[in-house]
Image (cartoon, rainbow, N blue to C red; front, side, top):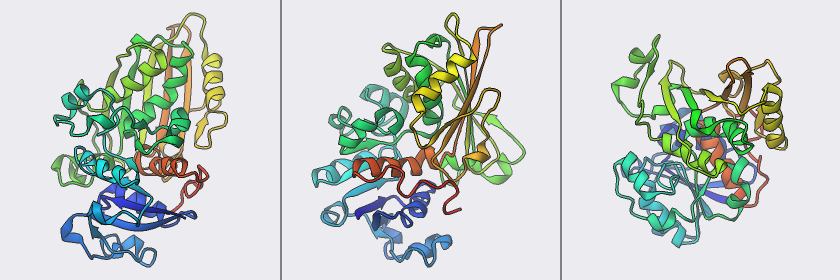
Length: 347
C-alpha cells in the first residue's frame, strides 16, 4: 500500500481527490490537511457525500510531522502556495504531485510574468516533470516532483501534440478555443462565478492574458522543436464540470483527415485514457464526466486547408485530480489505471 496525503482538501480538486483515493485499491489515505481552523473536523462533516466512507479528520499542515506517515503528497493548493510546501516535503523523501502551476513552466521569468509572484524555489523547475503521462510517462516514473497540468492545457496539448510532432500542421497558425464548466474557477466566492451570474449565459475571459497560454505554448514548442505561439481564448459556460476545446490550424501540403486521424491513432493506440473518434464523429463533454478520459476527433477542410480538432475532458478529472492519481500511480510503481479505471466511479 502506498501511503498518500492530500494537502489542500477543501477545494473542488481536493474533494475530487478524496472521492477517488478512498476507493483506491493500492493506496491508503493517511493524511488530509488544510486550513488550521478545520483541524480535527471529520472529513464527512465537511463533505457529507463522504460520510461513512472516510474516517479521517482534517489536520493542520505540519510538514515536519509527515515524515514516516506518507510516501507521496498530492498538493491541491492555490498557486504560489505549492512552492511553499513542496521543497520541504522533497527534502524528507516524500514524492510530490503538485496541482498548482508553481512547477509547470520551465522559465521562471514567464511564471513570474503571468502569476505575478516571485518564484521561491526556481532550482526545482529543472527537475520537475510536466505531468501528462501520455507524453512524459518514463520521466514521471523516475520523478520525485510532478507538476500536474492545467485543465485547459491538457485538453489542447493532447490532440495537438502528435499533429505538431509529425509536422502535419503549421504551428504558427494554431488557434485554441476552450469552454469550461464553472468548477474550473475554484470554490471561492467571486460573484462572477455564482449561479445567477453564469446561468443562461456564456462569456470569454482572459483574452491574451490567460495563465494557461504559456503552458500550451511550452509543450507544443517541445513537440515542434522550436518556439510556438498560439491564440488561446477560454470561455465560461453554465455547466458544473467539463471542458470542450476546439483547435484550428492550417495543415501542411497534402494533409487530409485520414492522415491526421492516423497520427492520433498511432500515438495513442496503447493509451488507456485517450479515445480517438472515428472519422465523422466528434466527442461530447457528457461522455467523459467523472473520468480520467480524453476523447478527441477532427476533420480537415481540404478546400480551406485547415484542420478543426475537438477534444473533451472533465476539468476535475483528466484536467486535475484523476490525472494526479494517474501520475501518483506511475511514480509509485502501481498499475497506471489503478483506482481510476472506471469512468463514472464515485458519481
